[in-house]
Length: 242
Image 1 (cartoon, rainbow, N blue to C red):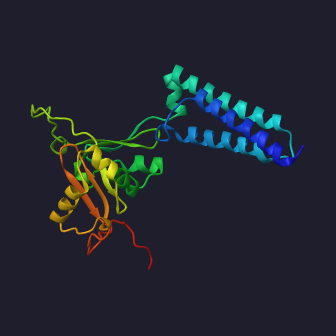
Image 2 (cartoon, rainbow, N blue to C red; image 1 turned 90 degrees about the horizontal axis):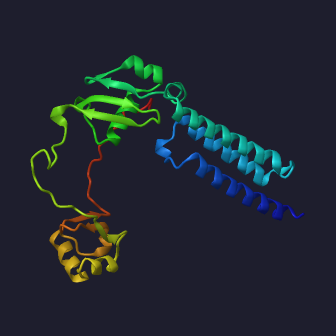
């Protein structure tokens, strides 16, 4: 049989095998996967790729390999769901790395984390000052969960007994210097209205705008290609030996 046709047939088998096994193993997002789950997926994918292109060996051993790895993954998932104490050792537990505002240095060393790793994860949570943090916990999937100190927690309309209308979703009016007329029509606006709004911000041409959005409340956001930023803040923690 022609080699190209063999690769095509094997690829189809690999594709649908992976599709079936991933559906069986679950629908967790990448951010929810543990490190072992991630490695398991890479291994199964690698075997499937070998099944597609390794014409020096028969296909059925590779397919059996995919089946065994997927079955073991499914078995492990069942065990961790059935016996919580087993999951504690197989998937690890959430670990406190900041407690009462203090960094747990020994815990960080044990987990092979650096302080810079924690500050990066905090910035992903929109926290740029560690004084705001009461507790921080590393989850088994590597995500950081944060509890702010009471004085830094955001007030909600519910806390203040305020009724708040839904804000809705912003619509793009300009993207990469190009006017999106369909979105303007959906918002009952026209090009002249947009040009007048741009003039209020000192903008003469639509092509000068990188992105412009309008939310249902009427708030217009504009970002230009040339924002005239004279000094960019450097947040790196080490410049290196140069």
